[in-house]
Length: 405
Image (cartoon, rainbow, N blue to C red; front, side, top):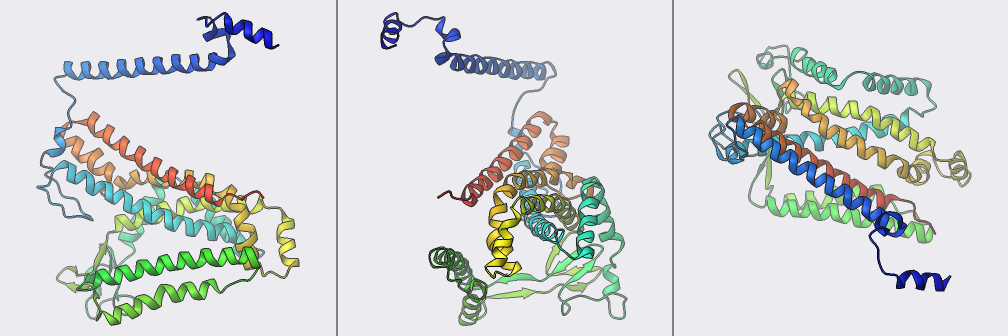
């Protein structure tokens, strides 16, 4: 055998080996595929540029520096109609990130609760969760967005109904107003010393994370359970409350008040944002509920029986035995649901929520005529955002995998 290998090596390399030799065949196929892909992309770009030239157009992103000339009804950063199209695109992108972030959080909470309750031994609770899951999964998302938006605008009182002697009243000690023009909640007013208060709060969150990790490591090493919930709540509230009074109350609240024909002050959450947020969360939460239910059912029944035999309560059995094993089944499809929710937020145009699709992919394209450049930028934004979400969740998935001994 050794003499055969030596003889083949002495013969030298031949071009035919790129096809017939299994050591090089896969590399040859990949090189050819890459070359064909590059040729196709170069032809596509060249053909597009030539067609644009025939139409009297060029491929240029200079329109981003031009004056936008349109208003955006909700902005997280300062913006006026005199701002550039690039500024308008950033405002739309931030609005997309806002509703995607809020939607992923609420969808996860709703989905986990519904998935666990659907396995409840209480017949009524299990059937109600089944109705929720099947109802939202089998009706198009766009219909839910429009339905919730219609309820927010038609079934809520007008601002004038909140006047003295009117038929409507504010909630939570006259601090929250729900009207057909949106929801008004108290807005924080940051004063001197608020930065220090924020630092204390961030340190409290870090302390909670550190304590939970220590508690889990000690439990694995000794079996001793530390009071995680009480200590976490104490770390969450007590340092911030003490710092608040020591610093002299650096943060106050501006409450909404009825002035003229609408509410003034406070934080205004438009009905379009609320409708889109709730619809995305409830719709995606129904799919997450099935993912959670399937993950729990994938854990052998003997695991819970063994936990009960050791005297663990059902809640601790779920938190310490069932869910940790089910996570390896839950997380991969959960990533897809987060990506779907983020991309489905582009339906915001149906209720007038000004996201990236409405600004960069809508009004900006209509005004500038740069449909190719606008769509390329919009597609690039969703691609990068999806890759970031997928990468972060894959890292989390790698950390949650069961470690083999």
